[in-house]
Image 1: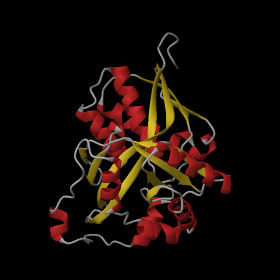
Image 2: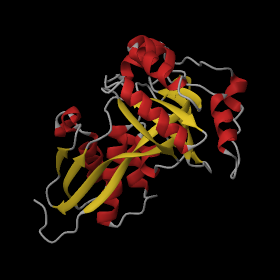
Image 3: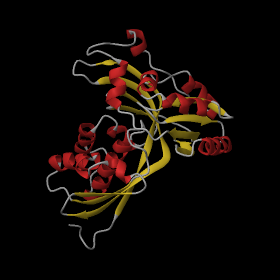
Length: 299
């Protein structure tokens, strides 16, 4: 039950965008090693916590039905993992207002789980660098640690190594055709075997250089364009509509580049200015009213 006088706590679960994504290889334990430039969008699910003695989750919002059963939600998984590590953890009732598409390559579930951990940290006076909080994030899912901080960074390994970057506000348009894309299916289509290394040793050792603080948006677009997403071709085979989404974004006036995020199927284009992004989003939404379209910024 919720405590009648307990203050409601609120956190946003911001969408994660993989601006670049390289699959370095696959470990003997089956996990894939990645190298990814990650930023966060200004669209987000909203999660609230009413502190109380009972751990519960209620879903609401336009995409609440897509969340599935509350018992299977990563919000509760993250909370349960933290309660196992922090004796006497104060929990309560979560309410998730779901607006981000699911199975979409933008870490919606992971962002929600990370928001839950931040809320529980606030409710219990835990520091964000508390090792128990970080361990709970890692055990919940590979994308949860990067979503915990929700700031631009280079993410490597299986998501546990994060190097923050000085990243500008980058105008973007994000598009999803509304068809879930299972991460497992995409990796199976990619077909990397256990113990296989997909890049040369020199490529692994050599770190990609990113623009320094104060660099222009054009410099960042050029640097991002030099990379790619190793999962894009496999995701297109799993769900061909991704090719149509990418074509629509690439054809937009002012688009610096168009690419898929994560394992799909959300795709994005980056622009030199906000006005070009807004015009592009309006055109795409008019042509494809059934698609999820967001114009905003990455940071």
